[in-house]
Image (cartoon, rainbow, N blue to C red; front, side):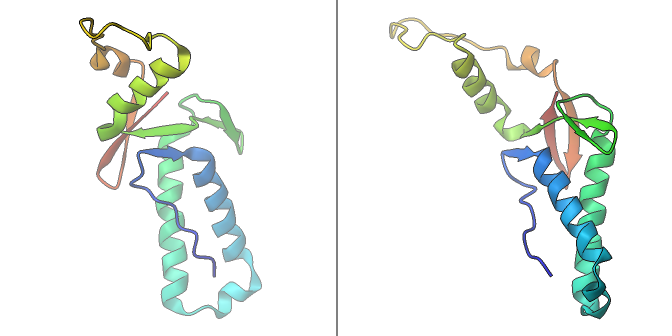
Length: 131
């Protein structure tokens, strides 16, 4: 039995990691050795698979850049509590925020306006944003 469970509380979740884990769990369940596994381990695998499948079901067909099993999925999920930091990083990466502003100037980002371009999903009671 593999023990590479995903951290579903991270600031960023890569949906490709969820897909890879679902495929890994499906292969594990299909393996002959799964029938010989202790019941509690088998239940853990089935529970994790059900959780990850529910996440993918919620994300399925909502656009994105990752295609899997005929549907499109967003690549990145951003935890709600990390959204502002993620947007600051994005703006810095694309060069929309000058790096050498004089100390008397301040840039104010309208995070609510940025969030309007995103869709939310719930994972274990936490909100994640994607587009």
